[in-house]
Length: 309
Image (tube, rainbow, N blue to C red; front, side, top):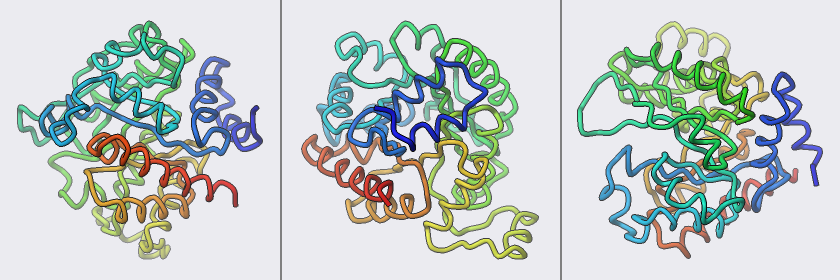
């Protein structure tokens, strides 16, 4: 059953074809949060991004790509995202059980670079072949290589949309022009979210912003207009506002593994600030499956409660 909230969100994408809107609806109507307008997605691109031992040694069953499909399904997630290899390893076995996102570019850490650019590692044709509902793509605003990534995304998004697939953009500020603190500064994260939305993303993924302000000219405006920096809910509200005043789905990264209390505090901030949900990888698959499912259920309970208000 299509809820009023899901219909409202789909109305934000009125320029898109039926295929795109149907695939967005698949995510919004799937899992424990189906129909609420909230999303919790399991992403497992960390084996490529960080290396297998760093990603999976703490919970060895997670070396098996089938483990992640089952975890996402058992936890009631709205969707599952992974690079080509992991999806090829399990898409047939779990066909139709959960909406899939094929991550089309990936970056490794074997070469230390101050201005990163990801390699394109999959195609829209791969996504269609594997029965995916969306493609995912990472951009690094702030990198000297950002223009190449923006142009790659434009081409991929055009092809994906014409094929009826939704587009999910990981927008992670990074590069020699930014300090480490600047990568998660409120002004920078909001800017990165705006860039992803302007590049045609249907779903924008960013990191949780800190109260730090990085850019001198932006800082003047934040101070003059008294844009609140605290608490976290206010920062989330500003990032959502930066994505077309909430007319694009904005979800937030779960980040490195942390304690349940700290993670859930962040989830509460996202929910109170009007965020659409979370995409939680390491905090899910780096725990034993029963613990991961219990934690994800607590996360979903917070979002369900927020949606019911």
